[in-house]
Length: 322
Image 1 (cartoon, helix red, strand yellow):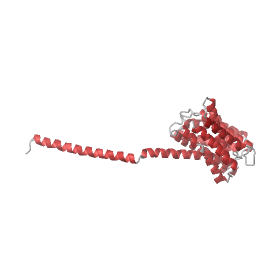
Image 2 (cartoon, one colour):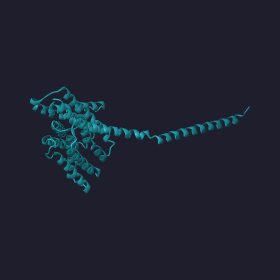
Image 3 (cartoon, rainbow, N blue to C red):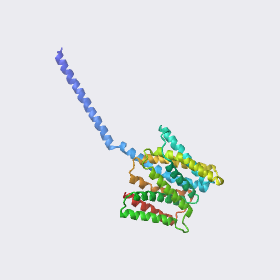
Image 4 (cartoon, helix red, strand yellow):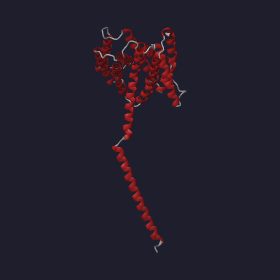
């Protein structure tokens, strides 16, 4: 028979051994987990992949606006005013649904001046694409947007370096070269309309830079733009033409490439640096031009290629140094 003191001693030694063994296993398990996370940092890879995919999807959506509009106005009988109205209304509905799914249906923001700028962009965009090729239109639009935003920065006292001034001059020369009269020049009136659309979008973008909730602000502005769109449709009622496929393309342009496209872009924009966000948008005219060639059989002229190189290269020099 062992004394109670001896039994108590054995008990304490046994407990200590179990504790040490469990502690050792716990340390080994934690070391294994740490090693696994170091070797395969999935928590870092996945967000980057998601951001890249969102960014790519947004760029294709923005280029899709040009393609859908050009396809509708070239291949169907829908008129540009009706296309504009359907596009704006569809985008407003989708954005409102997105806000409602987030429990923010009553948090619609925006203002009437921004809504009017949005309407001017959408209307001029549609009327320009009656006769503009997809690539030329996207290039003119993008060049005008960037020129407007760079001009605003200069007016606010921002200084450019010598290389940036050279880039700006190169981009402006590319725009002028694209619209100069010639055999392969795009129609002048349509080009001016697209430049107007670009300026309007630049103004809209500048006004929305300080928005606390970009999606709520965009939704509110699209909703407020509906009356303006209805007004131009009423004014153009004598020339109205409704086409089933045209309506489908207009609805897709509003709901998918505008509404969903902006939501995707805002999601990616939160994780992108300003210079990166500006640079990736250089791909939009190129995607639109490639889509126009592949889907619409539009020619790739030397004038378009040289102008694209001058405009996009010049803008890259400006925003790459900001």
